[in-house]
Image (cartoon, rainbow, N blue to C red; front, side, top):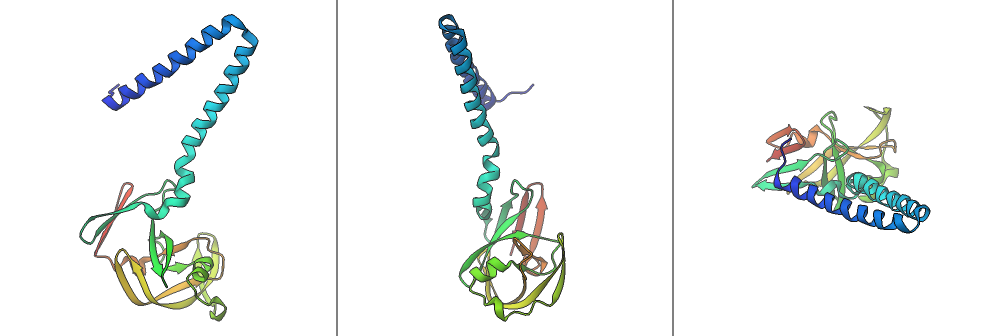
Length: 196
């Protein structure tokens, strides 16, 4: 087993905790065995609860931070870290509204969810949902819409044609029509890198 200094420090910290809890247990057993067992079970459940929350914290917090997992690593070069759900997310701006997109290389067009379209000030009552689209959830319908300005990674795209779904899509998808505007698009492990 190959331990680095970080692992050794964690092991020492864990042993210190075990010694202090073990010492408390030995002293308590001498006084009242039944009460000691009860307290030990209560504290064990509290610690298990903390470990459980710690274990799923990334999954919980990713719901709030999906759009914050990218960095600019050079001029016109951006890197996005894969989310804990296995997908890549990025933000785009339509009508001054920030939208979190799931990057979908299987989508030909960029598709805006009904909720994101409404939040962007698009009057969806004027749209004609006649374009059939095939999604992972089956068939759905979308309407074509021309966005005056779409901003993505410090780039502005004018007069972009996107699709808006009729409510079946829960997350907006960034499709190949926008991804193809980058010079390079590379997925390697849990990182996506693109440049303009």
